[in-house]
Image 1 (cartoon, protein in one colour):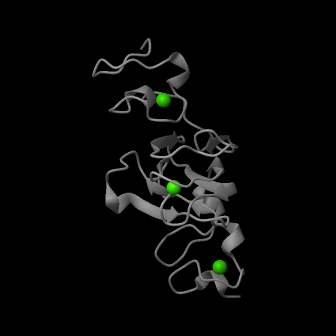
Image 2: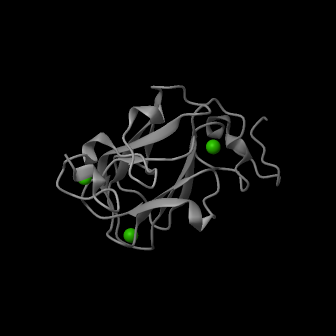
Image 3: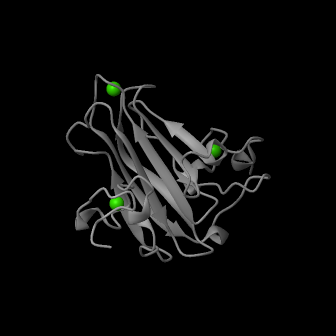
Length: 176
Ligand SMILES: [Ca+2]
Ligand SMILES: [Ca+2]
Ligand SMILES: [Ca+2]
């Protein structure tokens, strides 16, 4: 390793396995330790808890052991609505639009999210003006068998059960 990317660009040792894709092809996050059941990591916007800069385009990658999924709980969230966004997806390819789970922005705390794969990507992009404090997320590796599911198989975060809002397409999370 030594901090060099395959295209010749140089990164510091702190940038290896820090959950942030620093090399152009993300090889600095390959072969890193995976979260075991109950393990968690914190992901936060650049500069947090100070304001993030303009023109951010950063991608985070978090992996858990096989068979586990990732529970994303935002504990702080403030971005410029619609223009500075956080997108979360299943797997390790942020350019695969079909893998997207959710895109969030604005000043209210997003609901909890559970992936349906053992790896997730999170991309944070901001435009050229107006910023805020960004986000702090706790990402925990969990056993999918501990959660109820929608009819389509999506796992239901406990906070979405009987909270008077439909999480599942057909509102099964609000039954009973
Ligand atoms: Ca990195
Ligand atoms: Ca902005
Ligand atoms: Ca609900």
